[in-house]
Image (cartoon, rainbow over the protein chains, first blue to last red):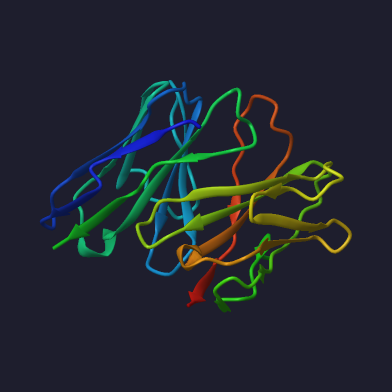
Length: 116
Length: 118
């Protein structure tokens, strides 16, 4: 099956700093990538949908300037949490789809962000 | 209104027994897809099974089967012969619309925590 990686798997940062999370499709070209946020014992909350070469589409209530998403190539999307605060601490998961696997999203392993 | 409803926040099952995790959905589309994912404590989302709205047969993947009742709009996951490693969160999800080369956005339920007892 298709493989999606995320880096880093966990990160601890100080309040006010920015953190970049990478999502890569390793063996396929991801036409669309999704970014989710998950709080403990809760469901996945879609933050934004990212298509290669175009601006991300953010879900209602998600701050575009806070969560910068760049989908520069068919294999890489990045999420940058700018000026992170403790309330941004969460589990961030990306997923990707390609043209040949319409029925399935391939999930990355997730990134656990802790803001002190 | 929620598009995916999982009414069981937690379930317990004895090892080697079967367990059913409930999922109901709400859509006006004729073409849609239903998924089940497993999320162990490590956090990764593991795809388990998929059912298309036009599929007449219930999907099966090893010990997993999806009890698809279209008229009732339910897509329950049945795990046979539970194993200790099955302890995890289970999410039901739905994709609406045709997967015709464009992107789609699945909707996830709140999840069910399954604990398998020895």
